[in-house]
Image (tube, rainbow, N blue to C red; front, side):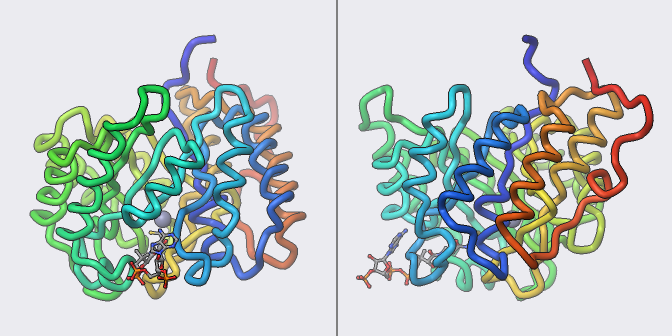
Length: 309
Ligand code: COA
Ligand code: ZN
């Protein structure tokens, strides 16, 4: 099968569940992850390696990495906030590890209790540790510039800072750099401008776009990033999500709607929408009472709708 035109990483099990009002049992998470993979999702961020006391919903990430690794063809992603988290990710066998580096100093302190520079120093150490592993145990490392489009604690975030931290992450040896709109402040014009500037600085290492739908602009921002050459997107089923250490943060761009938008445009995602709706039912049943969103799932597919080839 030809590879899809774009890559979607489902971050619901991490970004979604870290902010959900209810805990999803580990077994249910596994069923959900399997259902997502069965729908054709080939990259899933299954959790984060953070102190369980801080985010109890992420306490089972090691077990979920093991489960994800048992699914053929799935790239298993985990978030790590420091060297210790990365060591756990290495031990569990994550294929890819994402580090959140906030361009906002206020959010960096709130989220990881470090300055952005100290966080980048942690990433540098993790790259060295990764490179010392046997070749079959070297995860990809992604540096995600968080609050890249504004911050609820600090307000405006300087674009020069975003470019500078992205450049430092590339220089630290990250395989990929992503830009994240942690609190849903971005707009499409800003998205185009900032992605262009960062691409000029770090070239092909700029990969991922991570948008939140807090002010309803998630899809518009994803389209703007696509038009700027981005081919790798994070999204969350049902629009779950948000950073517990960024006041006012709410859900990610909704996977079902993102897949629908691209497929309707003729841009293939590799994801089967009907099967994706089945995975959504699994999630909804496992999180009773949790608010879930998604226009496409609620309205159904248009009559005679055909997915991109
Ligand atoms: N996983 C598990 N335990 C960890 C850990 C990790 N990644 N990092 C540190 N710890 C443990 C330490 O061993 C120590 O344990 P002890 O009290 O038993 O000795 C304790 O946690 C405190 O360690 P310290 O290094 O002082 O951490 P901290 O309290 O300054 O917190 C972070 C720093 C980075 C661990 C924390 O802020 C964090 O996890 N942030 C991530 C938040 C997040 O996930 N946000 C959403 C995604 S963007
Ligand atoms: Zn997020």
